[in-house]
Image (cartoon, rainbow, N blue to C red):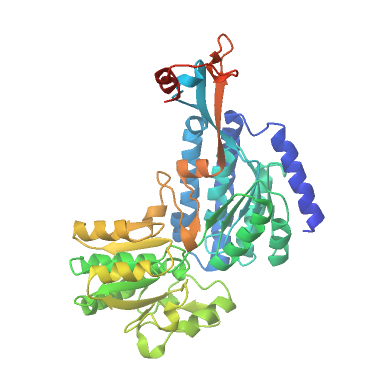
Amino acid sequence: MEKEEMELLLRQQKQYFYKGATLPVDARIRALQRLLEAVEKYEPLIYEALEKDLGKSRFESYMCEVGLVKSEIGYMIRHVRRFSSEKTVHTPLAQFASRSYVKPSPYGVCLIMSPWNYPFLLTIDPLADAIAAGNTAILKQSAYSPNTSTVIAQMIRSCFEPQCVTVITGGREENSALLDLPFDYIFFTGSKNVGRLVMSRAAERLTPVTLELGGKSPCIVDSTAKLKLAARRIVFGKFLNCGQTCVAPDYLLCDERVKDRLLTEICNEIIRQFGQNPLNNKDYGKIVNEKHFQRLCSLMDPEKVVKGGQTDPDHLRIAPTVMDHVTFDDDIMGEEIFGPILPVLTYRSIDEVIERINSMSHPLALYIFTEDRRTARQITSRCGFGGGCINDTIIHLATSEMGFGGFGESGMGSYHGRAGFDNFSHKKNIVDKKTWMDLPMRYQPYRTINDKLIHMFIH
């Protein structure tokens, strides 16, 4: 799409927004209902597209994308009326007589830029939140998931006019052109490097942004953990979507006293979940493209691989892989892995773990497996991270009752449920002053008034 066409779309959406078409709550609910109906109608095509782009099975696509989207849209339909209502707050005596209230208001036209790893979920989830808050939206899909992008574009055209919601496809040229335009809000999910670019471009217009990024999310296993169960849940979270999940456990920090037992359980669990030859498992996904496949292969040190390591270049597949005797100086610890490779490191004390994690960039997620509640409190209180789980992985993002997001280099802002509605809303603070009386004490000429009387009104 040419830049002139993008500018026209933006103008049309601004005109539509400023007519007030998206402000009535009933209109928002109808829009969400149309979106939900479209998701259900296009469900078979969505599964097919996700299988082509990422090798996802139908079950995984429903569990991790379509099902979560349906849940979020349904949640917003049920709660948007309450979220949108004005909230009366206390009014100081000095402002008598008046009513003070907070009014949630949409920003306007939002740019939602989505990634390739969960291309349906991470496009439609924030869209549902933006619609619930009363915004219009332009969706920019990743060029790395073309089949899903095509289906989403068809689906959106079936239920929305372009002045309300529309989709723009393409690559870097289109991304750059969009970031030149005066959007009212930008929501970006992707890598830290691109996130920095988005933020710098947004700063030129002082456009508010939400950045959902990533980082090296640690998974800590202490000596009290139930190792068999921990291994099962770690293997699930790490190798889901072939490791291409922003909140996947990036590396394992294990108490040195239980490392060997834990490694045995993890290797057994890989066989249990993916079979003796995962590369022949039709439900195991693939790496998104050749570039990422080669990057991941370069991170594997054959001398440190204790499980997996097999690759299938023709189908861009890498078997679930575990690396032992890894140190923080190894190449694999220099960047977010974003693939099916699990490096294992050890520690001797929890204080050592806390110091190490806090010396690194804040991760998007953190996981701790322990039966010691004191240890869990120490880690979750003293370490900086976006969100996480105690005795599980990744499930903290699968609810509309909690916000999801990072901070520092793992992002800013959060969404899902009420947090998503608030993220796409500006809260106007308004005082409605009555006209049937007017206190004279604030006006000049000032008269000598008892200090206690002044304090009573001001405080």
